[in-house]
Amino acid sequence: MALKIALFGITRDIVGQPTLEMPTPAPATVGALLDHMRAHYPALGQLRSCAVAVNNEYAPADQALGPNDEIALIPPVAGG
Image 1: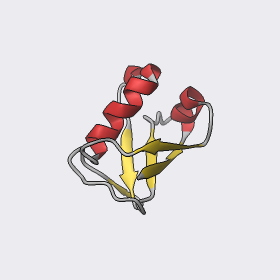
Image 2 (image 1 turned 60 degrees about the vertical axis):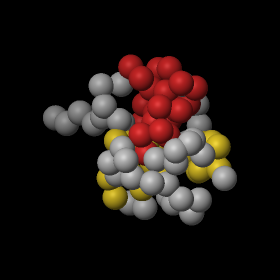
Image 3 (image 1 turned 120 degrees about the vertical axis):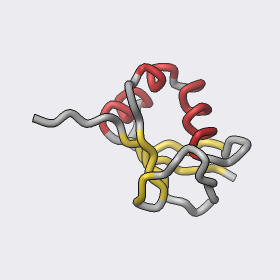
């Protein structure tokens, strides 16, 4: 099973594309996905925070991922 991930802001810049398809990590959780992505893109680990949305809602690290989930990596946002 592969997961399709939408990337925004600096996460898109780091990966070099607006979407990414990755094999599902084991276990298939948000936390495992972040660990997997940080291993493949070490610059993601340099961000002070990075949220994950699953099906348009912020997701905790222990949330399970399924093959039809819409996943987005949301970088920190500065306001002014």
